[in-house]
Image (tube, rainbow, N blue to C red):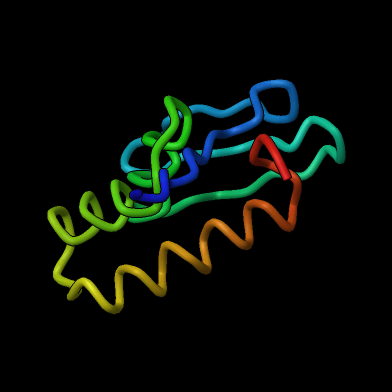
Length: 92
């Protein structure tokens, strides 16, 4: 039996966001804190709005940037941990 991957998703009740050029500006409405996400973060963020697994995020990052899969996995894990630490993702 294959374990189903967790779908990570931005918490729409907690954030407001806009694309600004090749960046994304995020407002944590609960704490009134702004975050600016550069190109790679913006790429991942936009996928998280609709919901994406870690594998989907890694694949998107590898396809769009000059990083290898191992580095992309570490970067995605750190990005998700940071977002979760700020309470910007749905779920536990």
